[in-house]
Length: 205
Image (tube, rainbow, N blue to C red; front, side, top):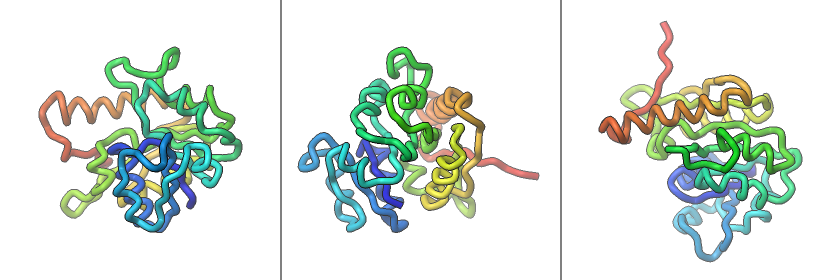
């Protein structure tokens, strides 16, 4: 797949690394392609640095992994997103988010042409995206959104990162639940002192 990644911090960088290794073509979208966080990502020949609009224009899928308060502003900066899948990996934490929205995915929908918006890769730390392996098991990923097409792509990209499964939590009405799910991980990892090396796994009996 051709994937634009907007936001080259911990989460965007981890996913760029994993997806490039899996053979996807990665277009990093930055305000300044010559100076940005994550220059080491360009060591993979499948990865290039571009302006945001150029990255989006060349891609089928867009990952947004920027600070949550900027979700609407970043969505507006993407250019033409008609027919493209947008994966939202952002979270409102401690009330810091796009003004007027209960979650970042709703802000994206309100500020782009795409209706194929899926919330995914937001419920765990970037360390688990780089390595979802725990002993002889892999952590699970979760997603939500109305777009069946978008969720099929998100699921495949989760598997390409090494997650065991990507569970469907429901439609757009579950966007806020996904952010609460993320806060559960943050609460355990940071506030309760469990550390970052924890992950969620669905067990069946």
